[in-house]
Image (cartoon, rainbow, N blue to C red; front, side):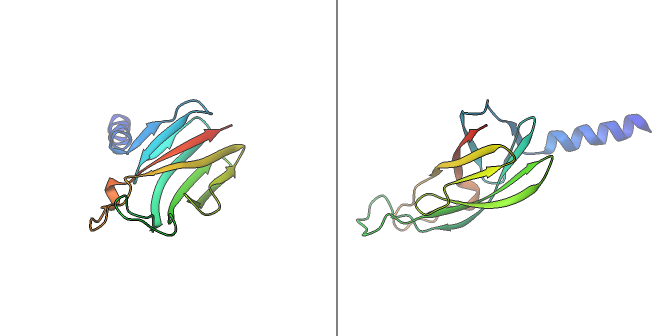
Length: 127
């Protein structure tokens, strides 16, 4: 019975979309729906609030903004934060970590729709 439970637990872990985070101070890339896990914190790219960035092949008056939703969890709390490329906030503090949105990819192109699963973000993690 114990072996069956252990086997199920291992299969569940293997099925998770998780990666190990680099050392604090490094930048990390997270795909939509993926979770980065470190010893004391996990960061999940949970959603996209908006992507109104000016397409690459268009001349715009304003650069636009991409808003992403991050679920950040630690031993003390789990919180969903909204971070932006052009508006504030671009950086949040959670349980001793600073998490800064560096980039949202891919950049919009006029007439093309970006599927949610094709988005990825670059974050700076600072302890």
